[in-house]
Length: 312
Ligand SMILES: NC(=O)c1ccc[n+]([C@@H]2O[C@H](COP(=O)([O-])OP(=O)(O)OC[C@H]3O[C@@H](n4cnc5c(N)ncnc54)[C@H](OP(=O)(O)O)[C@@H]3O)[C@@H](O)[C@H]2O)c1
Image 1 (cartoon, rainbow, N blue to C red):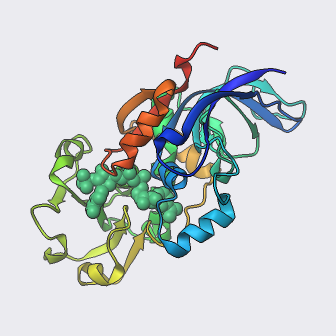
Image 2: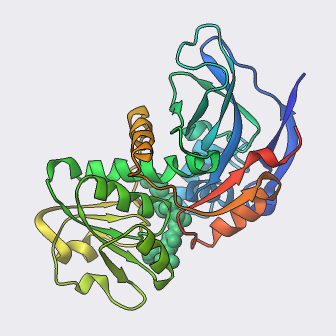
């Protein structure tokens, strides 16, 4: 039996619960491809699942869905970039050697050297000009930002006025770019620690929440996106236009992954309209340290893990 290295989560708890170990290498069936993973990312969702640091009722729901004492799917991680190593007999979309990226959703499994994927899943060719690290930094924040801004009706406006609260996270930094792509005027809210990133993303208006109360702004918005889930519709209401929309990542609504979104991300990257915001890159052997860093809740953009540092 062939084996591969993977980081498994032994129990819910701190980053020390992650352990790199040898597991069976997956074999693809007729409709699947095998991808040799080159990079993955550690996202807010991964650390939430590993730690189960959520309140009362949510904790019970998560235990029912994901497992009582440890995640049933012990290899965490939902985002990957890599190279197609094998294709199933009935597959047609990919060939060996294609550079691909994508998401696995509740199947997880990307903290590993290899993964099998249904070729009809959320996987497509990487932007040709992207590195594996960049490609792994894109899907999580971008697909969430596209989902919530579309939910808020961004497409119906010609030049919407949008406020993004929590603008420096994975979702927030992507939302700035998605909003700009749709022709929006963007006001970003973040702490002073986000100044450099806001300059890099060329945000026109920034409110630093450690210096100014954004709810006192004398301006009305078509859309307010809370990209960290720390506000409420009620607290933002005075800033909303009469028919404006408030959307938050902090509610019960889960962003659904769509292949069209992944293709849009790829196209925009090629056109230079989408930047991969990478805070740090960790080697696979330091995946626990990557989790420790994301646990701070203060990362800027994305934390990437390079899978190719271990001898194969
Ligand atoms: N519903 C869904 O489908 C869905 C999908 C994806 C993510 N989420 C949720 O969305 C949230 C954000 O995800 P993410 O991956 O973008 O997180 P993240 O990258 O870990 O966010 C980190 C950023 O949050 C900012 N932040 C922390 N506390 C803040 C506060 N009180 N006010 C404003 N900004 C604050 C920090 O910037 P400052 O230094 O400026 O504070 C930091 O840059 C998470 O709770 C995640 O679970 C939901």
